[in-house]
Image (cartoon, rainbow, N blue to C red; front, side):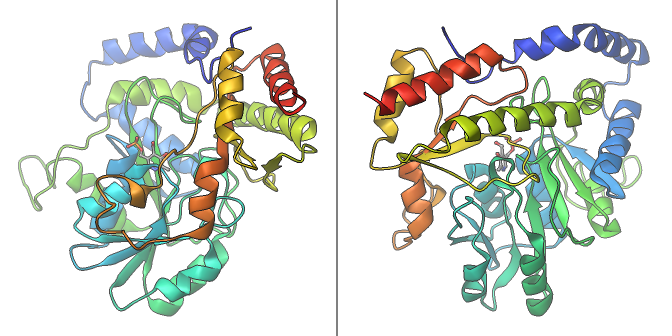
Length: 363
Ligand SMILES: Cc1ncc(COP(=O)(O)O)c(C=O)c1O
């Protein structure tokens, strides 16, 4: 049996009728830049997240960058974040001229709050935690530090649609990505900022649209980060069933935990009910990760590594971060393996994945 890591066309087949209806309305409405499809989706997504405002942009990276700019994070500033995320997290910080400062992660792959304070300097302007793999950071200690040092918190929620966030602060803004494989994925690119802060909303609305405040009145030197309204029309269809899709992810994760959790050769996190299981990531101990991966591949089971190289060891960063040693981040990068986990994974496919993982360890 062939088990793909993710097969997006299954989602198309499931929603086809509704997508075609939405596409037809979009064509008839004929507003192809910003407009009512964008506004409807922004209102729905803000409501879904329990926030007052949301502003759609072109990508998740753009969403992070625009929030940083809204807080005037710039050259000379430092932003504390993690090194095990998608590189886009750090690229957003670099794109405004600031310096990412990497903090180690805890056993759940999330920023280790115990270590943040020692990294705060007079240059620190913000903390940028990542709700990685759909796991959720407890925001209370992070928010307390931010308050103590009068710095901002920007949450990278690009992998966290449908999570139950813990101890949210009304003043933090979040960035989401609609990259096609995300829990809420577009048929192309997209991203969104959710915020309760009027300054963030007003800046984002302007910045994404050439810095305009009113037609042809360019108050700031913005750019074109407008979200595609066709994506919004289609995302509106999917948003209605996001909770159901996350429930299915949780079922899949539960089965993996029940079936594989007892194996001594792997480690599975203490995932809690807040997680949306954007990815199901195990740690393979004793240097066996790549051998397990090869075994799965030989048996036509796709797996991936998120991510194979930590951000500070990437060619574009490594010269600046030569001395960085982060014990958990470095260790986990050698051990992590993502198993197929998405709402349209079939039961017999998951059974086959489990059989192959168990089979490898009983060889
Ligand atoms: C944690 C994280 N941050 C940021 C991004 C950037 O999102 P996008 O690819 O939409 O720019 C991604 C997406 O890959 C991500 O997974």
